[in-house]
Length: 83
Image 1 (cartoon, rainbow, N blue to C red):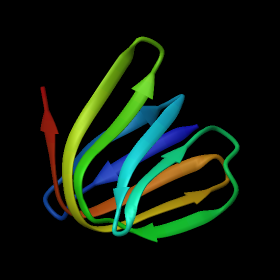
Image 2: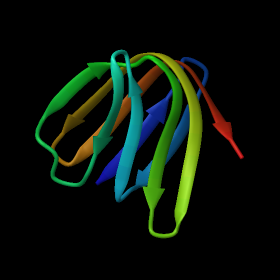
Image 3: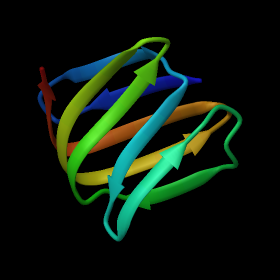
């Protein structure tokens, strides 16, 4: 599935993923390829994008996550990559 993570300042991540784990406003959500259409508000915490043997982690706060047509779009009020 294709994943896009953006903040008001910049595009933070764009690429393919095998799984996404995100901090929704009411708990963690996990997204796998071919997930049903879905939308949720984001809370604050670590957003993890997994692809093959690599995991990209971002601190996000506010905004929303949308799943549609095997694509995940994260539009966050704040997003910063973590090492």
